[in-house]
Image (tube, rainbow over all chains, first blue to last red; front, side):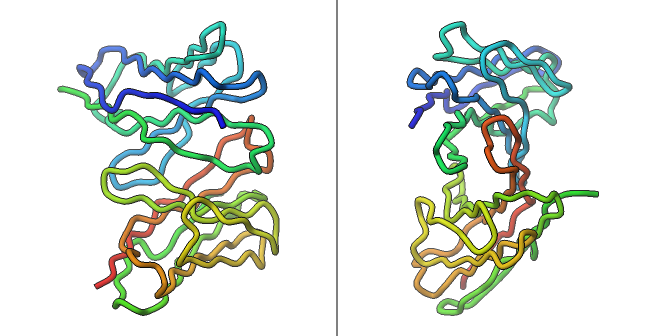
Length: 111
Length: 114
């Protein structure tokens, strides 16, 4: 299984960009990289996912390294509502559709 | 609106009693999941189901049971055999083949056993 490494916590100032890193050096060529976030006392919510090229949506951007061993979730302008735990999850083919969560990165936003 | 619903939001039970948590989805998803989350920790997979009348154990299935009699429903029973049942329980669903699709999560049930 692909292993991930994320910082335990990060801080950012409100209205500034945030770059959340994830290392997934054992990922295979067919694994998608998914990001979810969990706000306090809520269920996780999907943020973004990608395979090889960079991806953008209304919530965030995902920058995937050329060798695919790492990726970075980019919040372009952090707000207090972005304070959450962010999970980077490789989705592995033939893993019976299991979604396995790691410890994630707790993002603190400073007003 | 389509979504996934867990009920109740808060649940209190006496030690030794079985309790069943409800999870319903109207997204027409094939796959459904149950996770447990302890304070300050990540999500751990209890059970998952890819199709009606079939389910597989996750990493921490001991003391729990599930059924999948309908596509829309995946109830979780916390049995008296579960040593530390107090936790936040989360249900999720997704299309089959989650590589290129997103999973949807309910808002969770916080179970407290006294």
